Image (cartoon, rainbow, N blue to C red):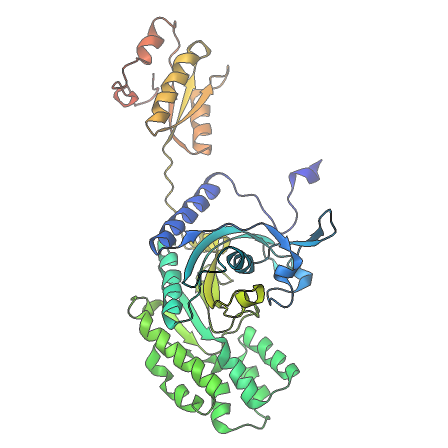
Amino acid sequence: MRRLLHTPEGVRDIYNQECAKKMVLQENLQKLLEQYGYAAIQTPTFEFFDIFGQEVGTIPSRDLYKFFDREGNTLVLRPDITPSIARAVTKYFSDEDMPIRLWYQGNIFINNSSFQGRLKESTQFGAELIGEDSVDSDAEIISLVVNVLKAAGLKEFQVSIGHVDFFKGLTEAAGLKEETVEELEQLIANKNFFGVEELVAPLPMEEPLRKLFQSLGDIYDNGEELANAARLAAPYPKIAGAVNRLKELYDLLTCYQVESYVSLEFGMNSSYRYYTGIIFAAYTFGSGEPIVKGGRYDDLLPYFGKNAPSIGFAVTVDQLMAALSRQKIEIPVQNNCKLLVYETSGRREAIAWAREKRLAGEKIMLLPRQEGKTEEEYRAYAARFGCTETLFQESGPADGLLKNVFPKDPANDVSDLETEGRRGL
């Protein structure tokens, strides 16, 4: 029986004030996305296996929750919402040749190793800008990331921006073997740039290329600092294209006045293989993982049948909540519910009064008085469940006191009654 009370490893219950704060946070983020013209979309919690298969380039098959339907089809709980949206857009917007802006929220499921200490179910909130390949769309999405985190209450955070073609261009120009590329990717993922230099040092390559390898660990706070990298990259079209795109992007981010929150990093990479251009991640204190990830995925929708370049981001809401808590940043929750403890003899009047208040927009919780319970116990109960005020109905004959307590005149508000100590209705 004890096992029935526990959740499996990697999942958790969210309730009371934490749940209320999470709902408020998501509602605030939703309002912001709608201000930018993004429309809501919901996709299924589980999809066919091929939606997240190896060709898509999401997460390894071993990390998927797989099961079968009655017809024997292999299904998976979604580990990522972006491929689901790519599928849905291809199906419902196949003829649309103008940009599509969508926002979403939902849970994802990744069967992480137990030793990683990560949640296996987490909530994502994100946005996708589909059908636009300009640097303008890159800038809009990244400015949205900054404003989403500010709307959540964060004051100190950084959005690191890179480009997948920088690393790809380096390895192609250097003619590196696949196993060497994989080793480099692992070193970069671990931020071991000394290891990168050590691995590259004995390899034959042109000097400008070697210096570009050495710049993988550099962080740039403005577009002007990219000038030297641009000169070194000039003989290598793919690398030069990545550097120029980053510089143009940074210049445009100044128009959005978010440049103080961003940095440019050549060493950025992603385990998601569907990214094709700009990639980014947001970090803050109190979270060991990025709270936002995103990037451009121009080849993902063509996989499903629609030729549409795209860019988007996903906020890991649980990581964001944890960071806010550790930074002691409160999510404002309006706990203005009132608890009315009523007498059995006055239940009709109590229900009628509560109905009237609810119609006026107030939050009223009703509770019949139980013998032996004290007023302090009721107040403690109210506090546990988010009520800021506890009201007690006075006992008395229904044709006397209770009639005066709950008059038919709606102008008679309970706020006019006694508010200190015991409160009679």
